[in-house]
Image 1 (cartoon, rainbow, N blue to C red):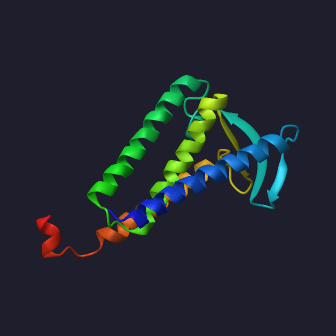
Image 2 (cartoon, rainbow, N blue to C red):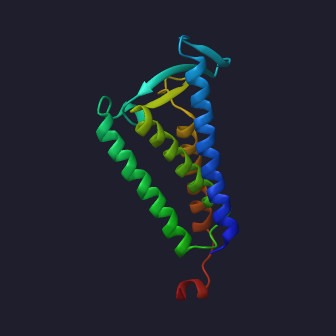
Image 3 (cartoon, one colour):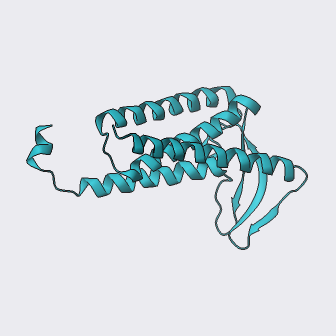
Length: 166
């Protein structure tokens, strides 16, 4: 295993978790009494909400069940990442960054579930009707996109005789 790639992945996870925590702390301190705060004119605004469910409020008002599900998904994500390091120690940096962002984002939302029983969401698009989300959600989506790009890019590379013997 290349330690440098492991450091990249852990750094991406720490970055995602830290970004999520910092933005949520700021939002909870500054948006408590504000209905809507403009953020990026014509694109996004800040609107503090609490989500006891998951994406698109799936499982809304079932906080305990959603915490269990989110915990299992996070554990699965971490296990997938560890397995990936063992099976493909030389995988490309995009996959490591993506996996790190997904883990950090998942841990950020899980932190909310364990500490306050719900996830703090606050980013609302204004140009389309889309569920309100947060920094952790953004990191998860960006991470998934990077892993997908890496997988698509690597699936197009021709395999050599040495690869097929492995």
